[in-house]
Image (cartoon, rainbow over all chains, first blue to last red; front, side, top):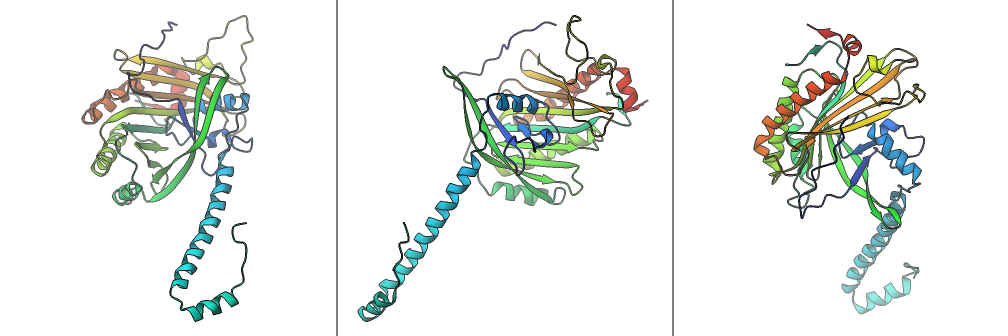
Amino acid sequence: MLVSPHGNPLPLGIEYPDFTILNGGISYTFESKVELESVKAAGSTAVTIDIVTRLFREMVEFKQLPVNPLSIQVTELRNWEIIIEKLNALDAVSGMLNELNNEQLEIFEASVKRRPLFK
Amino acid sequence: MGKKYGNPPIIEALCEFQFIPSRPWDLTIPGLIYERVKNKFPVRQQQVGIGVQFRPTEKGLEHKVEPAPPRIQFHKKNKTALIQVAPDLLAVNQLRPYSTWAKFKPMILETLKMYREIVNPKGFKRIGLRYINKINIKAKSIELSEYVDFYPYISKELPQVKTSFISRVEIPYLNNRDLMVITIGNASPEISEMLTIILDIDYRIANPETIKIEATDKWIEEAHSEIESAFESCIKDKSRVLFKEVE
């Protein structure tokens, strides 16, 4: 078998990084419970089977790479959602207060129960 | 015209187009595409992915993991074919049963035409036509060379029994304009006492932006012809018996 090295470098000025997308439906990890065939490596868009994935998975396992950062990001996202909800509520209330006269404001001040919202 | 088989091993044929990034991905695009394809491809699915980027450094291999844009899939009701759309990407997949190239080719070209009318891409970064074959052999062990003519060579000094194997070559075509990637390996069998071999033939352009969109018809025709020829070169008569060659 004659082996010849690649003769086609990328054209100057164009960068295509070695970027692999793994599509695993609702699963993002390489845990053993995930069947090999259920994880698709996509430089290609095959949906049945991709045996190159086996090599990729072996490399990820060999290097012990953590490929599951999404759970952390989802947690962060949920925290932000809660904070934004509180800010929206505060904004709505402050808008209402602008429409109150002095007497109504005093009643509001007396009846409102203050809580540390952004502890 | 290639050989015809009554029990073809093709489990998936797909054509993938990657386009030159031209404008920010508009989230309304999948909706517009669905409007056009919903009669033939009514079942929508979303594939979530992660992107893994590797970069060699002095300290070793560094990697970065981040969420990838979701890929939207439009399936036929019977799940035998689908269209996939993601930023600057379009793929047309035919699953089992694969009938003929004469039926698959128009599906590719019609889908591309529809995509162009909606997205108006600048040009191709990449095109690939790929056939994935699954060869099921009812046996506990086989002599691989009796079924295929593409397999890893192992020195006679080494034990010749393999429990698992994978072999892959990249062959340049047309003065390095195109590239054929042939991969063969074993896979988990569907039932016990069966051996499953995957023969994956992927023909693609080697250099980005070398094919114009208008030349798609000609390119995929050539690509199919090369894949068909490569497939016949990779299999042997024992496999042809399994596939039930039709005269």
